[in-house]
Each structure stands twice: as C-alpha cells, then as structure tokens.
Length: 346
Ligand code: SAM
Ligand code: SF4
Figure 1 (cartoon, rainbow, N blue to C red):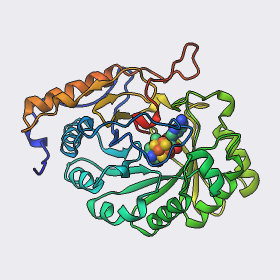
Figure 2 (cartoon, rainbow, N blue to C red):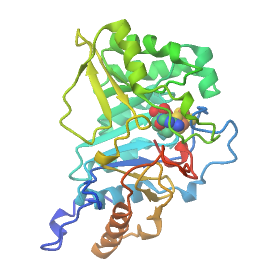
Figure 3 (tube, protein in one colour):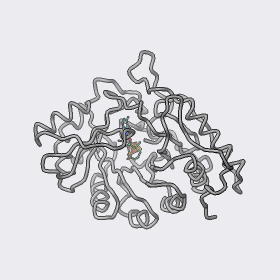
C-alpha cells in the first residue's frame, strides 16, 4: 500500500504538534529497527546476549512508515534509522522507500557500524537515504577486537570508503574510552580529514549493558578538543543555525574535514532536545535515560483511519508531555534505564 500524506485530511482548525511542558518542539525521530547486532561493543552490549527480539515482536516496515506519516503531520522532519545494527534487518531499503513517500520529511538518515554497509549502499541510496553516520572508534584491528569483541575493522573501513564515494552525506562517530582507544584520537581525526568528512566524538554514557560505566572512564569533549588542538592548531567553532543540534562543531584552520563533540555527560544539551525515540518493539521514549515507555504497537491498525491516526498522535503527545527537563545523569539517585543502548536505539 502506498502511504500518502494526510495533510489534506486534517480536521479544520486542529493543529498537531509535539511541544513539551518546557516549550521544546519535537522534530526528530530515532527509529530502532532491530536490537540485533553483528558485533558486541563493550560500551553498549553484553559479551553474551541471551536473545534478541523475535520477528513477531518487531514493528513491521508498514507499521513504522504509518507511524512516521502520522508524526510528520505533527512536525517530525528528520528520521534516523538505528538499532542494534540497522543493516541486520533484512531489506532495510524497503523501509527507506516507504519513508521517502511520507510528505514533510526533510532527512532520512541512518547510523550504522558499517560492517554490512558496502553491499547495501546502492540500494539504500536509490531508495532515498540521505545521510549516514558510521561508527568508528579505532583504526587498529586489536583495539577494534577489544572494543567490539569481534573481527571486522576492514569491513567497516570498506563501508566508510564506499559511503564517501556515494552521494550520501557521511559522518564518522567515535567513542573514546580512557584506557582503550585514547591513542586513536589523532589517527581517527587524520583519517576523517583525508576523506574530507566530519568526525564527531561522543562521550561515553551510562547505557552499557554491563553497567560498568563510571565517570572516570569518560574522556570529555573538552579534553579531546585540547589534544586535537595541540596537534592540528586552533579549532574555530562552526555557526550552528540549529540549537537542537547536540554537537559542537568546529573547523580546522585549513577548513579540511571538520570535527564535532557531543558531550551529553559533561555538557548536557537537554534544554534544546527535540528528539523522540521509537524502539524496535514499538515503544516510544522521550529520552535515552527515561524510565517510561509508551507502547504504540497495538494502535497501528490497518486499514488506516483518521481516528486510528489520532490515537497514535495522542499517545506520542502524552509521551512528549511527560518529558523531564533533563536526563539527570549527574543527579544523586540517578538510575540508568533498564534497557541498554542497543535495545533503545542510539
Ligand atoms: N549499531 C549502530 C552503530 O553502532 O552505529 C547503530 C546503533 S549504536 C547504539 C549508535 C551509536 O551509539 C554508536 O555511534 C555508538 O558508538 C553509540 N553508543 C553506544 N553505546 C554508547 C554509550 N554507552 N555511550 C555513548 N554512545 C554510545
Ligand atoms: Fe552494535 Fe552499535 Fe551497540 Fe556497537 S554500538 S554493539 S555496533 S549496536
């Protein structure tokens, strides 16, 4: 079934929008398509997983597209496919195709570990993917093995290089752990500059399945920036026209490549957060660190009707209205959410 915009069906005078108690307008949706992954990054997954969600618990591509169609009416403009590893879900390009026909979206992006990217790239591009973020924490195979508990760095690099040759807008995401890959900081920056792409460093958050996070393992964005500046010279802040953008981006003096720092631990950006999350099993979350979830799956019924769409919208509106002002990582009594990063969708 082709999903058409229902803009024209909107009841007169009714305005759908996702604004929370603190005035934050939600325009961005992270969609996890699976909790499965082909590697086991220690900052995210346990070494041994007791099982992933069964196929019947996952939202279907039609269901995801339908939800996005409803939320596009309420102001969602950007979607990012994630997981788990999104490319573990068969035929992901079919979801991208469905999303492309949702009117109002300005960006269909994906975050991937890159292992399966090279072979799926062409179809994703043809289907309408516009942006890809590839996670890369090291250029050394032993460190890759230590972090991800798997082999496969070459596959990731093959994926990065194929993406750079494609029409997609490509960025690298890296996570630096003090005792494991701080020595990779400069080589990673150099690699991104050689490819003339932006690399962003994200602080380690308490979302690892093993609950081994502690503040002293976090290398802050400011620490990383000082090291980068001592090697490459002063960085100039890039103007950001979008305050909800979590990264602080910088130019190098020679304007080659670019670098950004996402500092949710040392400099929370909650006051400008515009994001919602949808888990692979159909639960809406208003924050990575939230304890509550809203189950949309029973509401996604076919065929589509205005009242069913309204029910989906009202559920998501409730989720948004109950969003807290901040994630509270550094508050006394903070508890990480029950689900780890790979089960929520990063
Ligand atoms: N598997 C894909 C990947 O790795 O790009 C997509 C899902 S992964 C959960 C998305 C991003 O979350 C990755 O860039 C990863 O580095 C980041 N991530 C995972 N666990 C994290 C943690 N505990 N703190 C900060 N970022 C984390
Ligand atoms: Fe898999 Fe991504 Fe988590 Fe690594 S960060 S274990 S690649 S979901």
